[in-house]
Length: 471
Image (cartoon, rainbow, N blue to C red; front, top):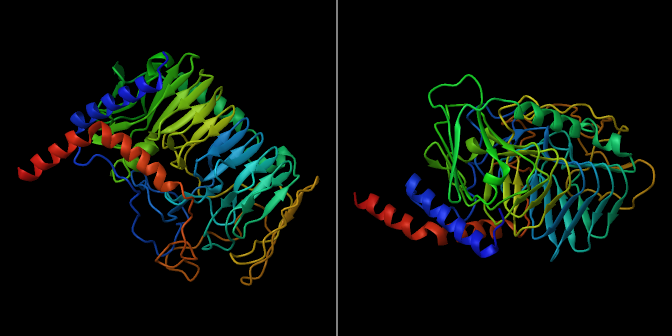
């Protein structure tokens, strides 16, 4: 089904109000991300324990070397889009061209899950060329200094056209490698997502799916479950939805939503409920849990659009699709075709999916097949040369201590710093240099979401809150 912008706005408002009544919210939304408590040691050398996935915050918290966001075609970040957390792998070309200039963060972001590749590891891998428009800064691994190496590294199969600026914060940058070497060990990841999508699509449903207006309800079996909760919905039924309710989901169970058929799907997420609680606001205690446990499998869809400025909760697996994103995503994003992200401050937050060993968090990176490199420069050191060359080149210099040892992008000479060690960043920022990655667009995305949700359900929720307080 198709919807005009006006109809979509009315639909989203009805969906948000409906969710407000269902969940009994005490506040319309969180306009700004709530920072986590300061962490003395920055990243832990491991993944979050099941059920302990963090909400949105500013601190680097855990280590994940698996792919966070994959484009099997080209990747374009323009408009006012802000950030891509975790490892970004692009099989084709990558273009960064923010409309009014500004910063696009990769790897570590201003506000996210804090589940990141280790300091100095590859955080941007591109099989083709990288183009950075004048006025745009691509900031990779900002403020990461807690490990034996620094910042975030970049591996490019083709050339780097740097009319803007590529900042690696001490990480290495290598161009002219060829696609296979630049993408390794994820050079066959497109085959992986196609295989996994088919496998998940073959699972038998364990729950029921219903749609009423713009609200889709996924009702699980409740109680205890030995495996994932599996739901099925036709692409034409999911198209146009804005409110998503997950009920009766057993504790700890992963969720698979198999979207059937090849029709294009366009949704504008405004509200998500998970087992009776609002899950898509940044102050929700269910935020990390919902983002980590839900996966939507678009096995046959060739086009996926996430509109508006809200939060889409859960991972996306779409091996045949191209994707257009203005909403923020929270989970893995694996798309077989092109990805364009162009919203107003929208972000991709890295939440590994708990339902598959293939897509889960991996604390230890695999050894990539790339030319040897020397360690990188700590923040404040010399900036690597921006001139692309037709052959594989890498520029970086060793930090003053410890003594340099030859490494390759993505490899660790020692584990990331453990909290409490001398290599840990200061408690104030958890970054090593006391600073946060910034884009100028983060607040915009939160305010856009706040405005949409507040307009839809603010009045109802305020009355509810006052009545509860009086009671």
